[in-house]
Length: 95
Image (cartoon, rainbow, N blue to C red; front, side, top):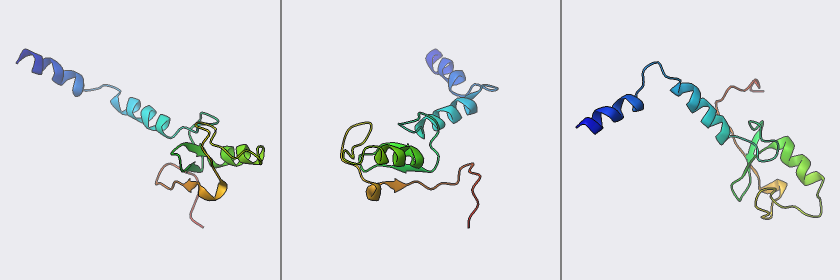
């Protein structure tokens, strides 16, 4: 029983910065694999890697004869990347 009571405070520490830590973790999950910043205009490749569209576009344009994923070297093409849409804190407005 003592073990259970010790585990509870760490799981629900009042006044802790759990929200800030969770936000940082969420931002890392949406990190571009090229620039390592939070992905802008995020796209995901067929192999599952996340990029900023501008970063991936530049990567593909500078290597026209070798269209591979910068992370795992799987074949990649502009037509097969999937844009990610969300309700995040974007400054873009609907057209």
